Image (cartoon, rainbow, N blue to C red; front, side, top):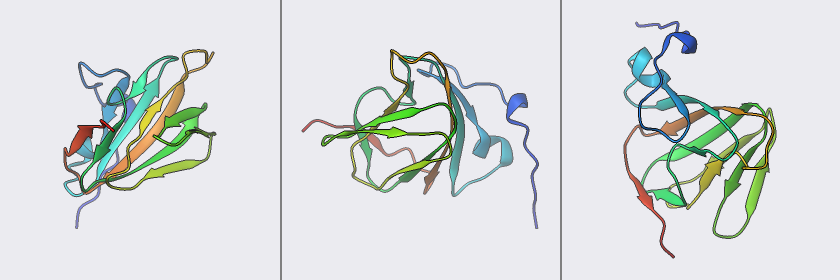
Length: 123
C-alpha cells in the first residue's frame, strides 16, 4: 500500500507555462492519473495556448476559486466556483481566465490516462 500527503504550496511551479502550474501527480508519484493545480491570471490559458484536443485523455477542470472560461468550436462555457467542466477525448477546448477578469482563477485539473497526447485543433 502507498499513501501520499501533498502540500501544493511546496511544489515548485513548472517553468515555461502560460499560467502557474503545479504538478501534483508528479509530486505524489501518480502514474495513471495526471493532476495539476493551476493559478490563472486574467488573460492566461491553462496550460496549452489555443484550441487543442487529446487522442485518449479525458480532462476534468474543477474550479476552486474564480470563474473559468472554456472555449469549444461550438460555444464558450463559463465554469463557476464549485463546478466541473469535462472534456472527452477528441473534443477541442481551450481553458482560460478572461482578459477582462479582475481576479485569478484556481483550478484543479485531472487527466486520465496520464499521457501527453495534446494536439492543436485546426478545423
